[in-house]
Structures are given as structure tokens and as C-alpha cells.
Length: 89
Image (cartoon, rainbow, N blue to C red; front, side):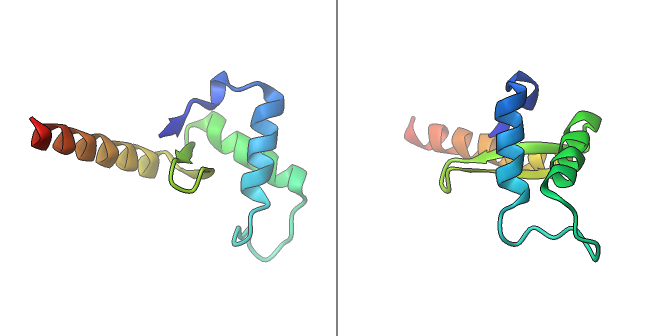
């Protein structure tokens, strides 16, 4: 599910982005960046429309992904829900 980040308060968005950018496995290249720099970069990616926040109900966590990937995942979810509804009728 895509999280409508514009509807989040600044404090909530900052906390969510901090959790995402400090998660193990997050790579920012050869030059290490501060958490503040990573959050600013992530926020700018959201504002530009390049990235979106996704909520994963199974892992109960958010991820920052490209908007294209977010749309694809959202469509796959809708398709799966539609198929499940069709098969129960």
C-alpha cells in the first residue's frame, strides 16, 4: 500500500524516513552520509515524485521505492485482490 506521505505530519514523516534510511542494508555509495543528509535526500525524492513510501503489511514496515515500482506493486496487489474476489463468487 502506498503511504500518502503528504498527509503525514513533519515529525511522523521524519521518524519514518529515519527508520527507513538507517535500516541495515541501505547503501548510499562510497561516501558516508549523515542520517540527516539521508533523510533530506529521501524527502526530496518524495517531493520530486521520483520515490514513494510503501507499507508492507506482512513485515509491518515501510520502504522507500521508485514511484514506478510502487505503482507496479500497487497494481499487482489490486489484481490479486480482484482475482481472489472473483474466485469466491
